[in-house]
Amino acid sequence: MNVHKKPNAPVLDSYWMPFTANRQFKAAPRLLAGAQGMYYTSTDGRQVLDGTAGLWCVNAGHGRRQIAAAVERQLTELDYAPSFQMGHPIAFDFAERLAEIAPGPVGEKLDRVFFTGSGSESVDTALKIALAYQRAIGQGTRTRLIGRERGYHGVGFGGISVGGIVNNRRVFPQLAGSDHLRHTHDLARNAYVKGQPEHGAELADDLERLVALHGAETIAACIVEPVAGSTGVLIPPKGYLDRLRAICDKHGILLIFDEVITGFGRLGDAFAADYFGVTPDIITTAKGLTNGAIPMGAVFTSRKVHDGLMQGPDNAIELFHGYTYSGHPAACAAGIATLDIYRDEGLLTRAKDIEADWHAAMHSLKGLPHVIDIRTIGLIAGIELGSRDGAPGARAYDVFVDCFEKGLMIRVTGDIIAFSPPLIAEKKHIEDIVSILGDALKRAA
Ligand SMILES: Cc1ncc(COP(=O)(O)O)c(C=O)c1O
Image 1 (cartoon, helix red, strand yellow):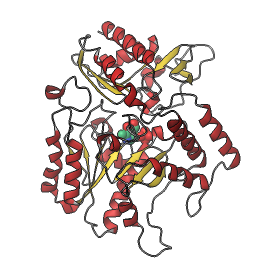
Image 2: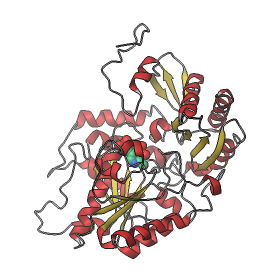
Image 3: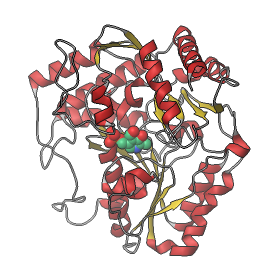
Image 4: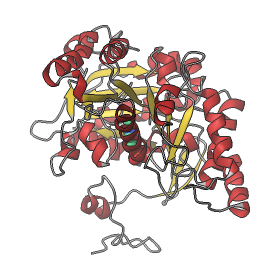
């Protein structure tokens, strides 16, 4: 049934929407028609301030002509080319440009790049690379993959297996042998923190416990988001990531950082690995890679991992894996134009410049109705609300709808509001976020 009644409105029946309560949405749709800079325009002509960079992806802001022009040029010149046993220059050029900003100490940078089509594909690619690497170096018993509770690693079978969100897992089978660390969220000890919380580094020792339980020789890799986004902005306690790194090193376990949201400047460095000073073996990215303009992901690996797989006869395919759209020319063009913008406008480090204003503004919401925690890092904020009795998530959802109607896009997960505005945000945008959200919180039941 199409219940959308406005004249000239689209028919909503056929599109089965992702991660959406389809029937509820179609009864009262929120539709976006345009976007420029920090703002969306809704189909009813209202300006909506983008507090979330789309879905954590439009880091350079909307409507970047440079990206559109590069994509148009590329589509006219070479629209598509296969990447299996064939190549096209722009994919190599883009990989070299990414290698230039890859994290890691000199000589150990993660400068080998495998292209995918999304964050989920990047995650499944990284897990497969880890398994293939362990086998290639004679560690074929290492087939177990470790993730973390409240982790989100996309929706592939690999990603949901290491992910730790019950709704993403309960209906679907998972990879045998995957196991999980506990999450690090601890409101009792770490509420209202700017930056990294003090307490919880010892939770990394869960990996030691899993080693003791399963045997190190069965574990291929451990994957975590440096800052978990989708389950409500969980910031790693001081020392936690370093400790995970040390335990992985001790036991021959590869460490994977899922940087699908933290990559490309979200924290004030190109990658969270730079920001936290911890270098994993593999990094997954997507989203900000192309400013969200064209779907694409990229997996960065160390040379150790890459070279470990470059074995056997020269005519052997080293990794039986890849996508029709790996290194798609238009996506590469979008990516290079995006990197140019990041470089020319200093966006990969801009979060550092506005971080103090951002943290102060977000923490000024402390004391408003329902707020039980505010946490901030880089240009990210999580604002946790107390749940309504018997209706978890309902309060934040109401705030989300209210904010949208008043001209602000926020993102909610359960009763946590997450902010990740484009990295071009100015003080006035931050003030508007605080003012619209503050009013919505005061109205919320
Ligand atoms: C950390 C992380 N990994 C993976 C993904 C999945 O990315 P995609 O939706 O592009 O498949 C996401 C998406 O939000 C994410 O936040």
